[in-house]
Each structure stands twice: as C-alpha cells, then as structure tokens.
Image 1 (tube, rainbow, N blue to C red):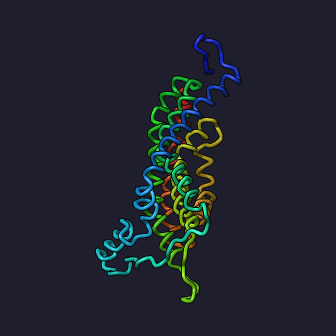
Image 2 (cartoon, one colour):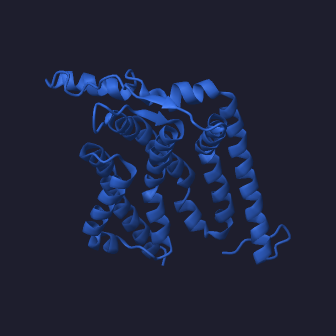
Image 3 (cartoon, rainbow, N blue to C red):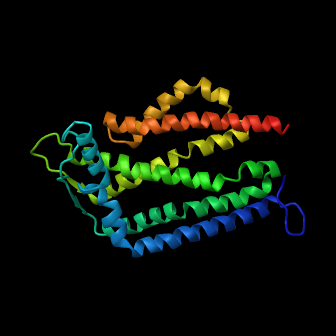
Length: 272
C-alpha cells in the first residue's frame, strides 16, 4: 500500500524524501525546544538529576540500606559517603557539558513526539490491518524507553558511580573525577538502557518483514543469553552484581519478544 499525494497520485522517491525531511525537521524542533528548557533549568538538570547519584541520600542507596536491615543483613547493603570530587580541567568544559547534557535531556523528553513523527511517516504505507495491529506502537515504544531510562538511572547508574568512584588500587591515590568522565558515565549508562529496552519493538518489526521468527529466537536462545551477558558487561561497571541486575530484565525482555514474534506470525497467518 503506497503513499499518495493530496491529488491521489502515487508519491515519487523524491516526494518520500521531502515528506521524511519535514518529519525530521519537526522532530528536531521538538528536541531543540526541550533542550533549551533543560539549558535554562540548569540547577534542576545538574544538581537534582545528574549529580544526585553522587549523594549518599539518593533513593537507590536508601532503598538498599532499608532492604538490608529488613532482611537481617544489617548495614551490609548500606553505602558509605562517596569521597571523590569532580573537577573540570578544560576552559570550555563546563559550557560544552551544559550544552551536551541539555541536548540529551531534550531528546529524552521529546522521545514520544519523535516516535509519533516516525509513525506518521510510515503509517500511510501500511495496510489497514497492519495499522490496526500497530495502534499501540507509540505508547509501547515510549513506555519501554522510559522504563529503560528509569532502570538505568535509578539502578545501574548509582551502582556504577559507587563502584567506580570508590574503587582504589592504593590509599596513596585519590579519586578526583573529571567532569566529562562523570557525565559520560551517567548519560551513557542511562541512554544505553533506554535503547536496549526497545528490544520487543525491534523484534516486532523484524518479524513483520520476515527477518525473525519465534522458531529462530528459540533456536538461538543460548546464543542470545551469551550476547546479553556481553552487552551487560559493556554497559555496566566491571562487577558481577551490576551485570546480573542488567541481564535479568534483558533476559525477560527476550522471552517477551519471543511471544511478540509468535503473535505477529499467528496474525499474519490469519490474514492470509
């Protein structure tokens, strides 16, 4: 089912590119708009969000300490005050970091709208039945992304900062963390989890175009588990607990993706 112009004629390749350009322009405007708001709200973005996992009263640290006391582990799961300091050694370091973080914040906030624009572009090329089955695409894509962002920010990021920020090879070496290194860890880990949580959506589309089937996913389940462990090792600090915490939801997402793939195949057979 091809896209049509307003006069009913089929759209050419250049027409498609022009249409795509305007969707990208609107998406970019939304990202820049929210980035400007984030830039203005500097104290909220940095003091209350970016630097919050550095403080010992961060909700994740408080939860682990409370949980340890509830299950009889005492203070075992309680974290100590993070002793490292942040420093900036580049003349333009703080300003460039401010801009970069604002753009990332703008992308995260505008993500549902960006998905909406992508959906508006591909929707006219789908059959009515495909449009009906894809009706919740915007919601589920945005939902999974936000869940991944929250999971990365509230669980993996504080564990990463606590492990890497307090790890020492000798008492003679003090940790004075470069600002860009700290920001990079927070944003990379958080965004990586948001993107990885889109696995069910990716599987949905790959199954629609015939690249994936539930049989293939079941056949290569062991290979997928190894890949998940490797991915977890890449996006987390080098400690086993963080890797397990990332691996478990990814394994669950993989199993959910198998069922999504099976559902797509089943509905395709019903429409034949």
